[in-house]
Each structure stands twice: as structure tokens, then as C-alpha cells.
Amino acid sequence: MKKYLYSLSVLVLIAAFSGCNPYNNEGEGAATGGALGALAGGIIGHQSHDTGAGMLIGGAVGAVTGAAVGSTIQKPVYEEPAPVEPAPVVVAQPTTTYSGDTVTVNVPNNSGGVTAVVLKRSGNGYVGPQGEYYDQVPTTAQLQAMYGK
Image: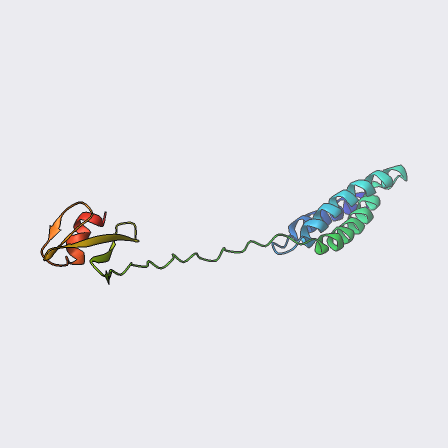
């Protein structure tokens, strides 16, 4: 009879440990509770001279209690982070503003912004900030070579 009870208690423990569900803690709670219950039941059963029955009853009660406790504990759920979309690249548009004897040309620069180039009228042409002379209002491409860096 004792061999039968020991074999049955080992089968109960194996079943308890193999019942793990990856989505909740019920199986893990049952396994842990079953093992601790079987241990406690074995100790108590040994005191009353029936270790096998104590292990069996303790394992069953521990597994049920562990499953109940484990099912109330939530496992953390991993969520894939939302993809980060790159910010749209805004290309600055060149603009030209005329005001009296000055012309301001906003020249796109390499950092994505604009550089304001102020040209002053001088005779029939225009003088740039570095003293360069233009026969007419220079194109954005001409100014970008010098000021667009």
C-alpha cells in the first residue's frame, strides 16, 4: 500500500509541475503549492505514522490553494513599442525681400535653416556682406555657394 501511495504522490507532483501556463501564474502556483503542501503533509503524516497519505493530501490541498492564489497574480505583459516615425524633413525655401536700397535674400544653408544675406544697392549693382559686388541681384545659387554653409 505504501508503494502505491508514494507512486501516486510522485505522479501528483509531476502533474503539478508540468501544468504551467505561460499566460498566467496558475500553473506555477499549483506546482509550488503542491510541492510545499506535499512537504508539509509528509512531515505531518510522518508524525501520525502515515507519511504517504499526508504527502498526498498535503500535495493536493497545496496544489489547489497554489492554483487559486497563482491565478490572481498577473504576469507582466510585454508590449512591442510603437515604431517611431522620423520627423519630416522641412527644406527651407529661398525668399527675397526688397526694401528701399537693400535686398534681403534668405539662402538655405546646410543645417536645414536659412541664412539672411543683406545686399545694399551701390550704383547699378549690389554689394554683399563680405564686400563682394554683383552687377544685378544675385541668384540664390550664387549666394548659396558663399553663405549656405
